[in-house]
Amino acid sequence: MAARSQGATYGAATTPITQADFMKILSRHTEAGNALVVAGIVEDWLEKLLLARGRTISNTMAERIFEGMGPLRSFSGKIDVAYLFELIDEDVARDLRVIKDIRNKFAHTTQFVHFQSEHIAKLCQKLSNWKPDKANEECYRDRALECVNLIKAAVDRLLYASALKETIQDDDEE
Image (tube, rainbow, N blue to C red; front, side, top):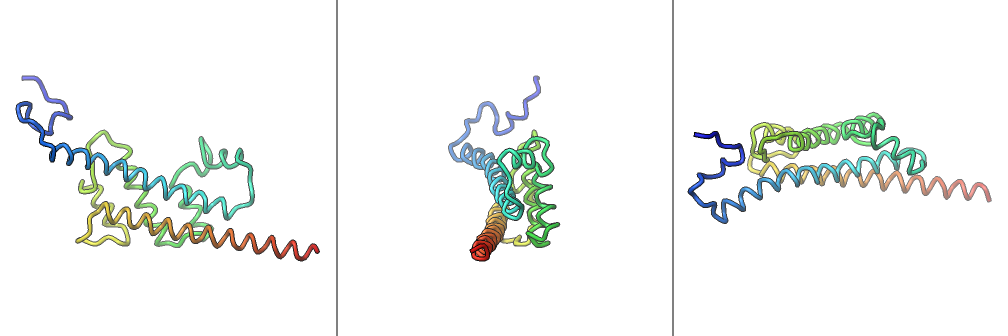
């Protein structure tokens, strides 16, 4: 008898897959996509925070720093530098590392994984908002949104302070 491929484990060849089974399979695969997109949004806001805190640079310089082989190309590097310069606190940095780790588990596997997979569930339990009666995916999304809003508030403060500084400098020049 020939060996079955990994993908053939959803049901016997003679048993049709029901609509409910099909939707369950699709929804679990959607979890991976959601995890990647959510982490991408968080990482984008972290990059905005670093750019807001730094000096004004050209798009070319930003690409050299944040893309390709740049020093801040990785999510981890952005987290560490934001923490180093006190742009995020320890709790946010810890949760961002967990979000990054969960994203990596979904992104770097050939196996079928979802938020109830043991290794993903253990990571979700490290999130500061995790509760046993709350779905892991919901904890992940909610904490990611909280982190984005904290980062966005920091960006807003930095931009406001920069605008005030420019206004004061303009007044001094007059």
